[in-house]
Length: 469
Image (cartoon, rainbow, N blue to C red):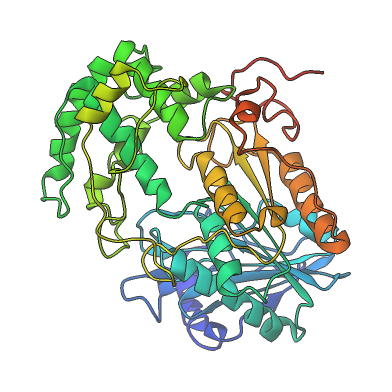
């Protein structure tokens, strides 16, 4: 067992030369774990040992590969290179990790596949936590230079990939440094930048309106606002038929709310009822983990800044909420839109790397993405927003989206991810665009078979008619 005293004896080694170059390690030479060390760039932050998993297990090379680890500019990093390297580097960007002050690096889900197929990979912890996409872009891009520094060889080609918030890191990175990458694979990604937070707003203000509970959106929330919001949510839940930690038994108002959320997250589609039940049974993120999931995401809790932007990034003044698919709105829909709280933005997606960076949807390289159609944390509509922006830029031919019949966030199995990556690399090498789903066609999305083409095996909690044989 490794004691903290032994870790402390090696702590200084992480702050000195490793901060610049890192160290190689062989599979036969397992590292000794050290305690987290103070960040040299972010006061109050600690950087976890990149030679160990966050669980304390040593990080070692896979058979037939070599690893390099270190800390650079306040961010831990890992690099793994197969003995028979094909010259391509995959840079992996991780997702949101809350607001803690310990940063740590981990491995991509496709690590073993990369090494088996001859790809090297590199990943950063980022120097900060929180929804700091800009820092994620800077630290992920820096991995290209750190790879050359650690291995002595420059990658001939670089592929960018990332999950969840890392999907936005991926989308922003390839637009910020368009000549540095040959392809990209975001998955379950925030490809609509601030539109994600608009959705969080939509879900909560429509719930309040349908439950007839007055709410506010303070641009500077008072110290007791979380308690105020808890009380307001407690008044909403019975009217909707939702209870934290238990499957919902929706009232008429709750069913209308479900219909509104379905249309705001990608349109009528298979499995939505099971997804809505799943996400309303789940409890939210700390410190609001006593509330049903969506209610803990209300942007008013942070003044719409997500604790990273300079002001409120959410806006629903031009949004007309629909609960039906009729050509003309119903009287109930008009009443809902007349009663819903309207919010005006005071900040927008940033054109650079500050705040919440903008995703233009203007790729210069092949981009292949995967998304669960039942994900209500980072909803499927993120794919449609990116596809619409790519279409507006005349870049539809460079974007392929694959719909997966899953309910959770980033709920993909190894085969789905592997097939996606192999399709992307085949596209890069041959120029032949792989197959995807027609996500901008409402009729295609509403088809009972939507998502069947690229889903492999059954995903837990997703309930829909079986796919055609």
